[in-house]
Length: 430
Length: 80
Ligand SMILES: NC(=O)c1ccc[n+]([C@@H]2O[C@H](COP(=O)([O-])OP(=O)(O)OC[C@H]3O[C@@H](n4cnc5c(N)ncnc54)[C@H](O)[C@@H]3O)[C@@H](O)[C@H]2O)c1
Image 1: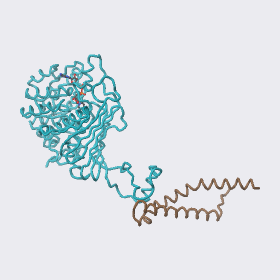
Image 2 (image 1 turned 180 degrees about the horizontal axis):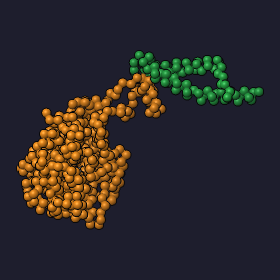
Image 3 (image 1 turned 180 degrees about the vertical axis):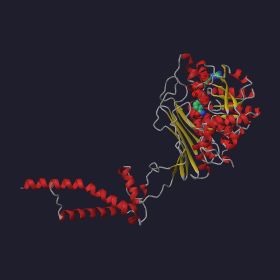
Image 4 (image 1 turned 45 degrees about the vertical axis):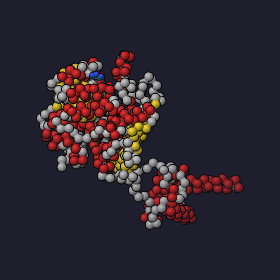
């Protein structure tokens, strides 16, 4: 069995990697991060074209510039300032304003698509037809039908396909899933996700006619709002932890605070139901950041905080009676608690400090809309390079990405219709 | 500097108060064992926490005792 490289080992090869002692057989899509995977592509580089050189595009460029297995040969953006900013980062790359021209470029082996959501499907399909390997940012596409068209074209093309679900490459999520699947928290009984921010989600617009282009996230024609931009990542946790997909979803959403002409909701609350009765929630409000970002897998014997990499037990370590009494005084809850009978254990949140299951965790408050460091994005882009060079499709990524997007889209539709919607049999294509 | 003289009576009183505090702490431990459904051997095994509670009680009593002493002195002066 191949072991994943330790951080130190991989650092010396690549410049960035994670330390996980897990067996690769459990996480086969991580092949590119193993010693064997590294050897397979030694001395080779994938020739890449970046389509969409806005904030996420530039984030990938910055990471790929230090990855020896990547060579950025072409850049494309139809907004000159973004194209020039990227060109400054890779002066040797050819520049295009029309992505079709980039796709005609025989020098390009694979493309990374970082454009607004509504362009993901047409650009991905065109790329496969042009014989390119594709890494498309999440969410996969604007509608479930678009996703199906993308998958069909990918299967026809025989090319490699990767989607920006970087949690699949984040060490703390990998370790957490290993724990969950080994039964460390008992049976999964609930999944709770939330993502709160307090900002208008707007970008500065140099002139008014560019509003819909630059702030594409805020308009229905190009975005499905909080569901495709934020929920998509968190919903994938549920599927990964449960090894199954929800049956139905119900939800609500509204524009409560940012009444500035935007069309997408500024707050949503959706609930998914799995076939075994487990519920997964996603809540997002972008006018209050008190709770920040949270992702929890609740088990009958414990809880895993995915964001902080901590596992809590339902049965915390034994404490003597007098110790519990002193702790209660310390926490100041004696005053509002009936101090008698077996009901002393009130429904307060657990005070168990939990145990960290990975060392040196870098957490994020989820406030950046570009991406966080050490969240698996670097490794995902590297996995794409490995796949382009070897022609080997990384396992699981497309399936996880398809369902994450489908669930996000269904949740968005449910919250617009304020109804319960089912993931149809015809939508379970992978 | 003047020597500080603590009378035998004062020492006895303080020891008695400390003993009362300790007894109270033991009683609290017993109540906790009952309320929190923990184990009876904690009467002995948790002696450290019991002493801690006794010290807390003793310290908490100090301001009250000082207040009582002050009131007594004021009354005594008035009655003279
Ligand atoms: N995986 C993650 O964590 C993560 C993080 C941030 C963004 N994203 C995704 O990345 C994508 C891009 O987001 P962003 O924040 O970089 O947006 P952005 O607006 O900063 O960049 C999008 C770029 O696409 C360009 N573009 C638009 N139409 C084009 C066309 N027809 N041809 C060529 N270029 C075109 C725009 O000019 C712009 O430069 C989105 O799908 C977003 O959801 C993913």
